[in-house]
Length: 79
Image 1: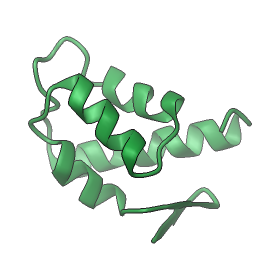
Image 2 (image 1 turned 135 degrees about the vertical axis):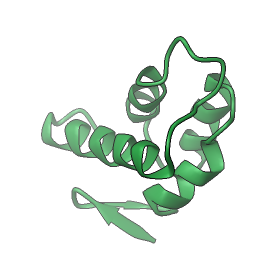
Image 3 (image 1 turned 180 degrees about the vertical axis):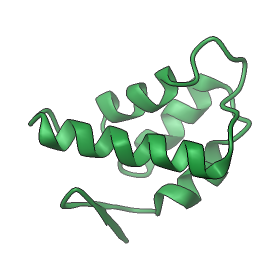
Image 4 (image 1 turned 90 degrees about the horizontal axis):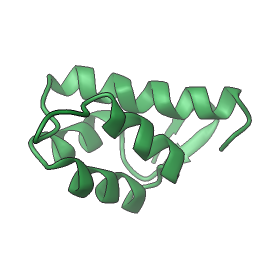
């Protein structure tokens, strides 16, 4: 279990990034929901890669997007 911004996630951002890399946005969104992100967090991550057929980028880039989405939602009080 991994903690980001005081919140427990089922998998590390790096592991989630590896699992969604190369998936189409809908499948990536559903995968993120399955492993602990809220709808808003998952939508934010996928939105960063909008306009692409697949979630592509480095593992670090995708993991940072996941961390940033969780942190932003927690700080904004929306999670």
